[in-house]
Every structure is written in C-alpha cells, then in structure tokens.
Image 1: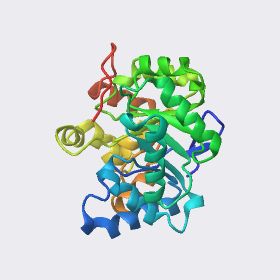
Image 2 (image 1 turned 120 degrees about the vertical axis):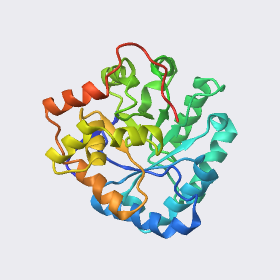
Image 3 (image 1 turned 90 degrees about the vertical axis):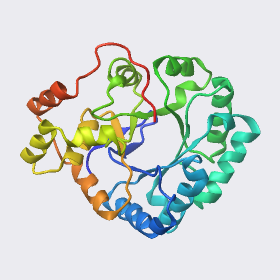
Length: 283
C-alpha cells in the first residue's frame, strides 16, 4: 500500500488499517478472524486497532494470537477506558492489555473517551508510560474540538499523535470544525466504522443510487467507494473491521481508488456536508 499518513512524530503509516470491534465475541469465528487479520498484515494493513473494552479483552486476545509470529511487522493500537486512565489503574490496564496481546509494548495507546479524570492526570500517566518505553506513543479517541483544545493546554498534551472518531459518509459532523482543527494542528484523524455499522444507516448507504453508480464507474463495490471516500484527503487513517479474508482484500483495494471531483460532488449532494456545529457522533 503506497498511500500513507504521517503522525506527529514523523511515523508513516498506511491509510487503511484493521479494526477489531466485535472481534472475539463469537468463538466459532475465531479461526476466521485470525486468518483475516494475518492476511491484512500480509497485504500491508499493518495498523491493528483494538481496546480493553472490546469483548472485555476478547478482541485483544484474538489480536495477540494473530500477531504472535509477526509482532514487529505490526503497528499495534489499544485503548484504555476513561475510568482507568490515571495512576495505578492506568498501569494495570496497560499490563493486562499487553498480557492479552502477548507483547511487551504498544505502538500507540489511546484514551477511549474523555471521562471524569482530569486530562492532565491522564496525560501525566501516558507520558510516564511513553518515557518508560512500554508505549511508544499515545493519543485519544472520541474527543471533540473543545476537548482537544483542553488537551493541548495540558503539559505534555502536544505529544498527542491522533484522535480516533466515528467518520463515514452518513456521519460527517466532524468536518465542520474538528477535522479542520486537527489538520491545522497536524494531528491525523483515525476513522472508526468507516463503512458504517450494520443497521439502518448501513442499509441507507448501500441503497444509494449515486453510491452504487460511482462504484460501477470505478469497477468497484459501494464498500470500497465508502472507504476510499473516508481517506480521500490524506489526513485520515481508516480502520474498518476485518472479519474475513474477502473483506480484507476488498478493503486493501480501496486504497488505490481515486474519486474524481465530480464524483465527490455527487456524493455531497446525497450525503450533505455539515453547515453548522454538530455534537460529536459516537457509537
């Protein structure tokens, strides 16, 4: 995969990685999920995103098994719950994640969302972990513009590498102020659920004649167009869930799709960009 984004510290990453929300929930799918993650790594989708919350650690365990013989080829991301995000609880949460992932360090550790613990305490804890080497970098998730501004006022807050938020064609609220602000600060955005969740929005997206027409023009499928759209600006890393090998191969092909200005305008007519500040969309 030739398209990349660059983190604050200069690290270059492919624009499409692999998400693991719901991975590990069904034991009967474990072998298939491990095979898909490994195939994704082989194809260049080396960013693997997980969290202690996903299946109460089950997703981390699946990821740990998948990367057991290729850890150094992976950019491993996990997330800490907000009520664990300071002091001894932060240290313990990280240790438990590392044990499930069968590794001794994380490439990136994220605060899953902002909770009641003061941000400075969380930043202090993450900075200590970074300086010790047990995490290489840290960032945040589900943080709106005002939260990010508060974060950058913290001592050490400038070391935040990414903000992971919900972003897909039917959820564009971040484009009004958060995404431009992140771009100005040179903080990449990680897009979770870039293909939308199964359910009403997912079905509405797939029912769009415009989306399906553009897919036909590009000799692609609607999922690939949605994914290509999410990474179109060069400042976003998308992490679609990869549950089987066919999904993985479809996802990687989206990195080579280039949407024309006309096609982007057509999508804007159906999936209208925000014209005012909207609450941060979270699932």
